[in-house]
Length: 208
Image (tube, rainbow, N blue to C red; front, top):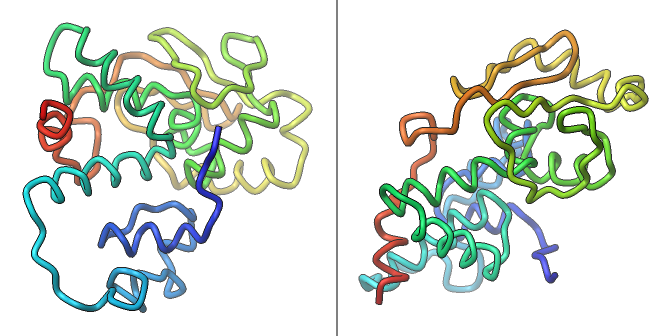
């Protein structure tokens, strides 16, 4: 499946906000949004009137880029959210939060969702004791996510073990910082998702 492989800082600039795609760099003075807070390209600094459709499209693209999913995947999540009981927009965000790569990031076991996706693909994590290397794997309440025993000795996870002391997971996840593990104790509610997202715009876009 095709995936964007260019400079991720361009994505933040295009959406006009930090998407925190590069981990610690996003909190430093090296962040592109700190130096070039305008859209990339020749006409990036020019003011443009955005239509209603354009606003809806930008919101959808922003969420896609935050969670690192393709257009086809995103459409699949939306259709699944529509079939569930409750508010479609909130269901959509909840499904995206259930992705294994996002949960790994939320537990503080990776510096960014991009980093988490790569670590999952390389087989560094288990879910309920079984190795899972699919970033889009959807976790359920009661699932336990753990760094594999052999992986904990690597320099990467030694650094993560030091950094995780300063990172707290959202309320729907239970951290075990000492053992580099975590447990899903509930599904994410809208209040748990601390991202500047207007999911209703996405629902309106797909309802056209």
